[in-house]
Length: 114
Image (cartoon, rainbow, N blue to C red; front, side, top):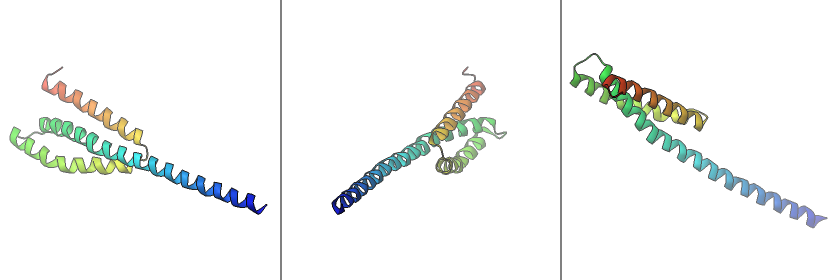
């Protein structure tokens, strides 16, 4: 009877260790995916946004480009923080992709590419 109890405890401890290892891999993947979304998605979002902003600001061309480039640091930082604040990684990617597509369409219409 005692041997059965000891064997059951060994199985439980192995299962806990295996679950910790799986949790660790899943957690690492989630963190890497969020960093990828923050770095790549944030860069694409920010670059399209500052291009659009430089066209829409009612300043001279030089001043609007300088102001939008200066603001890009703050915008990129906000996007980076936002990616880690949202619970769902899928929601992050969907919002970044939809806003990038919307901004790219607006930019293309303003520049006369479409």
